[in-house]
Image (cartoon, rainbow, N blue to C red; front, side):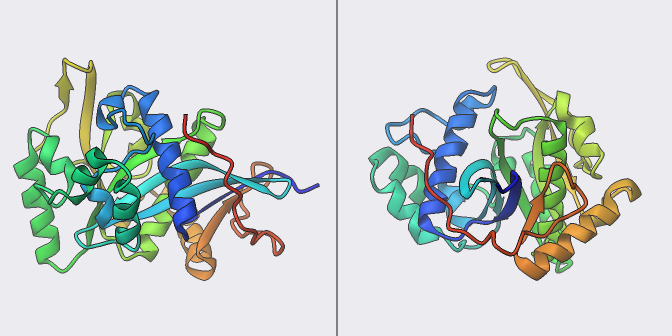
Length: 264
């Protein structure tokens, strides 16, 4: 019997993409961030930034069956590999189609909704003018069945490693007050010139953060670089709860994911 393990990688098919969009929607609708994922008939979370995103998933593999358990997107300033598929999926709903085909008001959503958006925009322009790549890490999602510090730690380490391989020098993200210390452990720091924000409507206090390989603390740097080597070599990073230092998939594990996640 094959032991349970987890695999982080870029999504590879339209079928996988649909599964993880369903997962993303389900997690956000049940969270304090439900306002970012309005309810819709398809049960799928989509917006105009998905067209310009690279989509990553965390798979749980157990006894020959795979299921989606984690998701994150890397928003860039150009069309992503699933741009056409995103538009096709959204076309099943007039509301979603309008959202997906809208021209983004800003290159990254963090600029649109943060009060210090102009400060963040100037930070991005400064980074890009020096020839460096900046993205926004968005829609970080973990299924409640596996949610916990160890899994979140692995997921963020894998994300950091993959960004190195994708030549991302700086990433942007927002986080809740309660999670700031967790991200700080990976070198994420508040964007200079921004403060913490409180939205009374949603009772939510958040920060605008930026991360970089340059900021990685010594405590996590070696692990991130080892994962980056595994990702660069195989296109995936694995996590074995009983063997957390092993990052490569078993030789017989390259199986097709079986869609078992259904819309609510």
